[in-house]
Image (cartoon, rainbow, N blue to C red; front, side, top):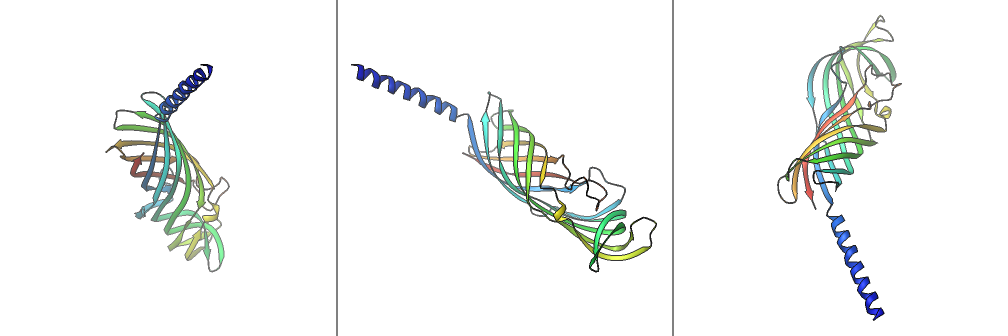
Length: 244
């Protein structure tokens, strides 16, 4: 009899644990995402040194992400994951009295440049989003919070052409240049900022989303002087997700 009671209690306990585990599992939602980043690495506002934009190309910048959402209440939850992404662009701008460091005829010169500047940015990051999620309805979610990004490969380079540079000070003698620059090694390894987005459930296991990431930490360190203004990553990520 005692043995049967022990077996009975064990069965009840196992059933309860299974029920709790099943209920807990239902609070989690896993998804895999793929998308495109569209945006730029730029100053906040247009500095006086930049007189015009000749061209802008967002280039193909892909992202893939694995994420998990934890339900807290009927309407609220939290979400995190790991995103592998590229943030890239190409621009051609007209500048005047633009502080820059160039490689010209095998030597570095730093000064005030006037002319055209072509810039290529292509930075690869591992990003961890940390977001609060609000369910507007069964199909719509709003997401807001922040992100932490770690640089795995960086490229910030370009050319200065159709112009001249005054080495050192604005009063120095003009020197016609057609030179290159490369600040890839100066890019900070860590980037962080705000993230805001929305997601729409199109089908049972498929959703589409849009997430805006706005960096609060500049691309280059504070003691970087080769460019006179701070630059930030601002990108919109558009894509789709498969929900398990």
